[in-house]
Image 1 (cartoon, rainbow, N blue to C red):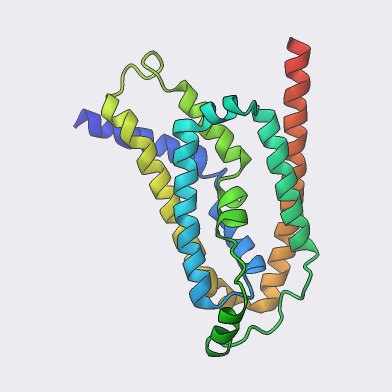
Image 2 (cartoon, helix red, strand yellow):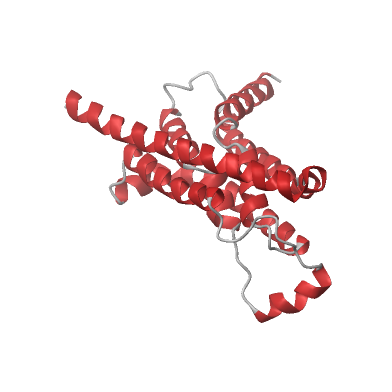
Length: 229
């Protein structure tokens, strides 16, 4: 019983740390903006695909993130700056879309032939999963969290709870991501295409601001490290 309490505590702490960073609402806004020309069936398929991507990215980051970053010589500040540049590009696409966001979307029956004739844009991995949900902040938090888990720092916890808790946390985040994005159609029905356009532009501006802050934090970390060295 005590070990189950430990597991619940670890899962709760993990969700509390990662949920503000891996905000599924950001990905929902990206889906409404960038996936507006997808058919409902294709949109739901990519949402499910993106949920698995989110889970996979977090698992790989937790168990091999530090090794991958060390192998390629990537630092946390470098990760923040690179992620910020990616988010800046996505934010500008939402602020200044190449085509009107409220353009008429053809019916599913009419679109099916068009889908077969041309390649469908896939936004499941980029930007919905990465960096929409599993962004640089989330990855940095997971890498640092994995580095702190050890026999000395987690002496009071059962080994099996330490091994199972990350999997449960990442699975719950992937499930929450899937639920939020599956409800995107209801949001569209409630606020209309004009509302989606307004939200997308506001979110685009916020994404640009967040991306600039990512870059600033990365640069400041580099300056502090060099000053301390």
